[in-house]
Length: 367
Image (cartoon, rainbow, N blue to C red):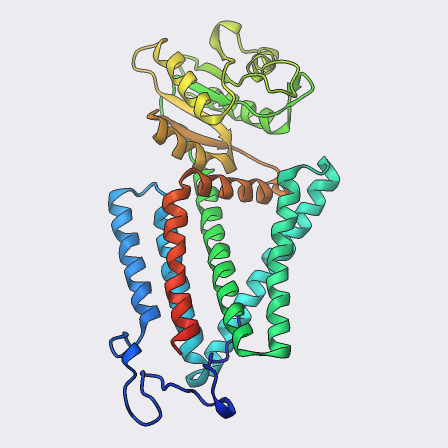
């Protein structure tokens, strides 16, 4: 998204005050950069990538692995954008146009999705945030256009920093969307004995669209069991929200009974008010029923990855599968899950992300 022209420090007549390798015009080496690596952005990229590999070996389920690899790509991208513009202008142009089109497409998609959902469901905070995210991406592209029109050394450094930050976040979100897409298509455990259905919003006193899809996914797991195997036990998990007329567990139990499931095969967990409690309270109910149980948790596809992370955090060894989601709602829900996962491990993830300042500073001040 950023201008692909090389960033030059202030100098008379547009000339650089400092040469490419730290040489001053008289041939003397600058003491401030005497020991600076020749390609610091690429060095940072290698360090981040190495950290990602280590993270894969030690904690492959953590999202910090994706953060490190995205930092590596962003650092390498800054190096390519800053160093190839003069030597390889065609390459720099292709990279800049590709980044521009990708950001433009994502910004327009987020904005359109936010408008569509607000018109359909009303001005809810999560839906407004989707449109706001799209406006933010488009605003950065507008900032780039202004810079191309007016230029300026200080403004150019600011634009590089903004583009690097937004580009990194877009890349991280796209990687997270890939996580969500793949994890949302997990298959149930063979020989599942218990299906835990996580609650979602009600429509009056009945399950809403998201919750109905989760219940139908749970029924499909039961229907697909091997011939002669015992019927699964359904654990419906969800308390009563402040804006709900009954507990989600009661609404789910009534729905399953209406679909022909005997009440004896339904266990209600009606105390939980968040996903962590869903998992802990449901696990306690499952552990107290049948020895050798194998539990599969059903939630919405976009929610599978975060549910898996939460299950590891609360020490509940479960397998999570996803129910389908409306395509119009998937992008907004995935964006919300992205923010929730970043908040879940906010200290290490934000701390790692702040390391992007190193290659950004090098790109702004080192060329």
